[in-house]
Image (cartoon, rainbow, N blue to C red):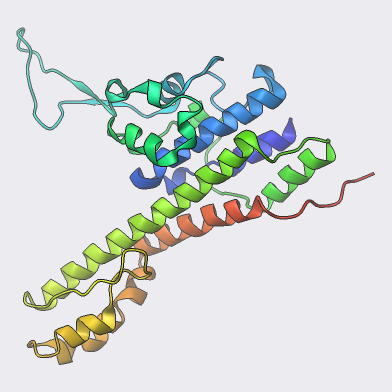
Length: 273
């Protein structure tokens, strides 16, 4: 039982909750739950234990999600004069026939379906992890022990839901990369316009890092007033952004999730006799 619980602890990523990656993380947790139930049975499961089998994606989301009631973008009242409140996220907007086990293998399609509800990746850790007592640390080294313990018990962790766990981790890391690039680009645009409203930003191709072309931006605006004075400040923008609190949070999330994903490919350790 311990190896699976160790894996569960690895996935306490509350500090890394994010709208863009959160949809892949909730699929990840759902896959870990399936992995544990299939291997250990209901009694050995430690992920969302309040969602009793058969626990489909709809039941899982309702069990572990942080759902608020609000007025919505266009507040309305009913015939009785009372406010009409809506759920945020609103899972009634999801077609759960598109979030069955087979459909979840297509993470992009599943993510788009979750987006319809306004899902922002906010989860209730107390509902998600049995015995959770707070904290957001991810003891990355424990994943080695997890796989080694499974191997030494004669259980093959590869294939099936375990491969889907790896795919979900990769998707969550990639989503954070895209989100980071978007934030950096918008921040750079605002800074450039603050320096001179006539400055123009030059972007790189969509997959480049960083997503803004600093040198081309400087060249394009060489004739604009104030460029010579602000050239060094513009050159240092990416480094300064990376070292800011917002930049560091994004980079930490990306590195942690990518690191966990990479560890799933490491060779097995030695079994104790």
